[in-house]
Length: 176
Image (tube, rainbow, N blue to C red; front, side):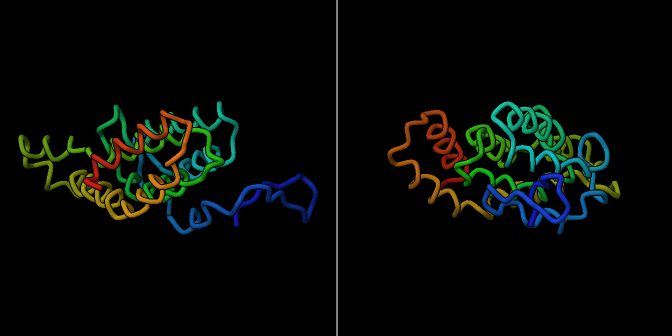
């Protein structure tokens, strides 16, 4: 379980529920994001999960640049990151849930590499095939679409109109 150290040997702070437990199961250093190695992604996800509103928003902005540049160009690390985004979107403690949900919608709609490959089919012959990354990322978003129903139900009396709107947009994108 990922917990914050208090600085004292043998002590840990576990004020937050156990989320992002599977981060260490992904070989982040072996996959790429838009900057090169995706090794920084676990730290960004952790900042989103446990940081203040400003910290979480900044971390999400950086994460978005790394896994879904310009809102439509996905990377190799995107599909591996999606399950953690779903987990964060479900956590009421996360400050930037609407933005996470919008990021999931952007990933679900991403078709930049497919469009490029239709014009330049040689792209499909590269060892690292971004069309495959894009499809895997979209599939990862769709695979957890059942989660959306609980998010919609949770928001029945929600006062956060931005969260309600973002969730509705994602539901439409996923056909839920």
